[in-house]
Length: 222
Image 1 (cartoon, rainbow, N blue to C red):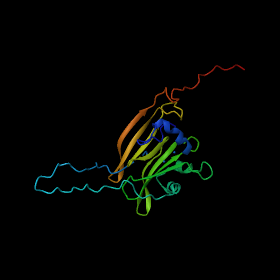
Image 2 (image 1 turned 30 degrees about the vertical axis):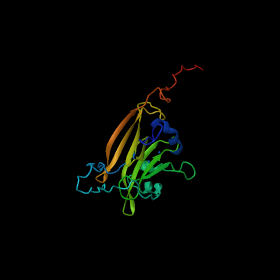
Image 3 (image 1 turned 90 degrees about the vertical axis):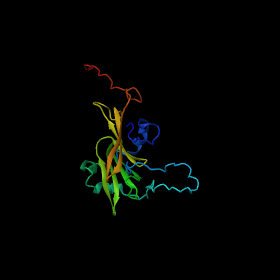
Image 4 (image 1 turned 90 degrees about the horizontal axis):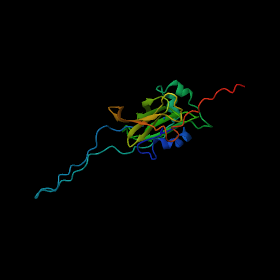
């Protein structure tokens, strides 16, 4: 897969991170924080003569990180009514007790406890089949974002939820999609809203993208 784990903070470009994805398997679409803009201290110059300069303190801001609390991602998925039956049915270990699930913790919704992003992948080719975000409410986690479709993966990037979706044209092989959509979500008014979207179209002449199926051959007649 090309670019399935791309994020604005990642290195090497979206299509050059595919090897790491195949080793782990696909659980956002990537990330939210408050949608309000940052504030700073206005520079008013030196204080007038005869007046003491006032010490201006910046307003308090939300912490950049939240306490980490490990969760049982498999149990969350199996008991979540928002997770589709097909995803639950295929949620089985790939080998031994290793499930094809990636779990990411980070501050998305400002609860004071790290939110949880869960990506579910296929065992064979590490294609994402679902991504979900869980937020603490009281003593439990609730699903506040879910997306179930082929080739989807979410990450937390600097307080935003970034969801990458592979785009396939007709007859595209699974390893070589035609492009990808990268959508950034932010938490606002108790929900995630789309903040920014980028569409990438891959070159068909690079990194195997220009490889075509072999031409058909005539029957041997034997």
